[in-house]
Length: 204
Image 1 (cartoon, one colour):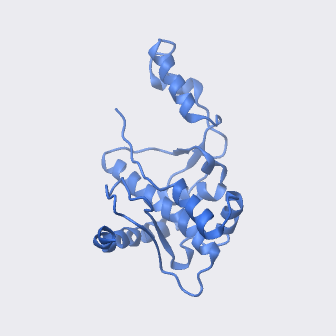
Image 2 (cartoon, helix red, strand yellow):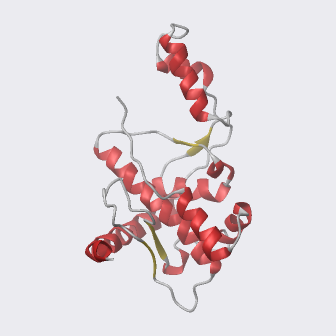
Image 3 (cartoon, helix red, strand yellow):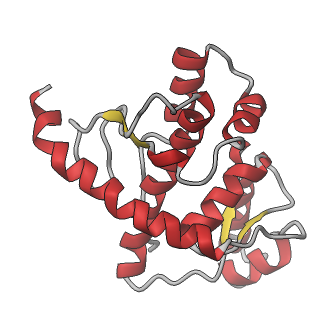
């Protein structure tokens, strides 16, 4: 058995913003743009629910939205708000796991996002925990191979296999306490924004 939180709009939300709003697939450039905005994005929040949401809402009608835009809001603020919105959705999922008693000491990220220092810092700050990456780039295949090796008796159990095979890169990203406090405050608003609009989402 394992505990899992699944969100629907991580890469999808970023890809939508890059394609439909900025007109680019240069993700590194978009992350450099987002890095120009301060944490909290000048008050801009983004709900990333472009295809509904699973954890924790189980709401197929949930919609995406920007909130808090002013004349001072620029592309950098909006780009960072998209990343932070995804982070808030992941924090909702993490909080569900924590309520079940899951207490990780650190987080491990994989995929394309693991190449972005900004994204890893946002996650570390959101979760209030170190964020690490693994030395191998193909996690799914490696995980399947680990399960197979345990099944045929190459290793006694998954823990032993992971200790032998999975290696982390040096230098985890540490959370910045001031940012963690800011994001916790913003997270309450993020959750209130969804709650206030849930009925409207279902009507649209």
